[in-house]
Length: 137
Image (cartoon, rainbow, N blue to C red; front, side, top):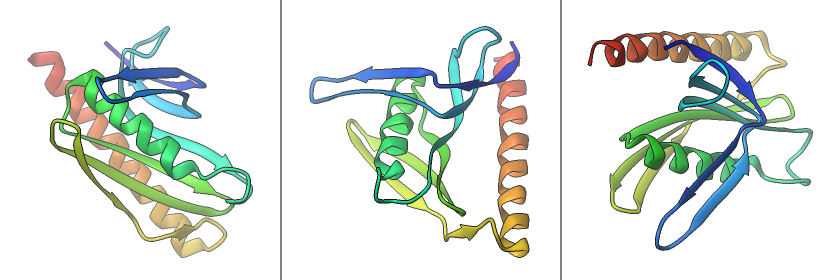
C-alpha cells in the first residue's frame, strides 16, 4: 500500500472521556484514494496567533491518530506565519500523553529554512522505513 498526501481530511476519535473531530490541513497517510493510516501531520497555517492557535488542533489530531492506529507516538508540525514548530507526541498509558515541541524555525532565515527541510526529509525517510516494515509484518 502506498502513502499519499491528503488535504482537509476529517479525523475523529472518541473515548469515554472525550471526542476529537477536526479537519487536517495536510497529512501523509497510507492509502491512495482516502487516508487509511496517518503518519505525519502539518496543521494550520495561520497568518498570526490571534485568529486561532494551531497547537491544540494539531495535538488533538496526533492523539486521534495514535488511538486510531494503536500507535505509541506520532509526529507533526504547526506553522504560524513564518514560524514552524515540530511536535512529537508519545502515549504513556490510557489517556496519558506527553509531547515535545521543537525550537522555533523561522522560514524567512536561510539557516532555519535548511533546518525545516532537514526535519521534513527525516520524517519522509522515517515514513518510508515504517511503510516497508509494515509491508512485511
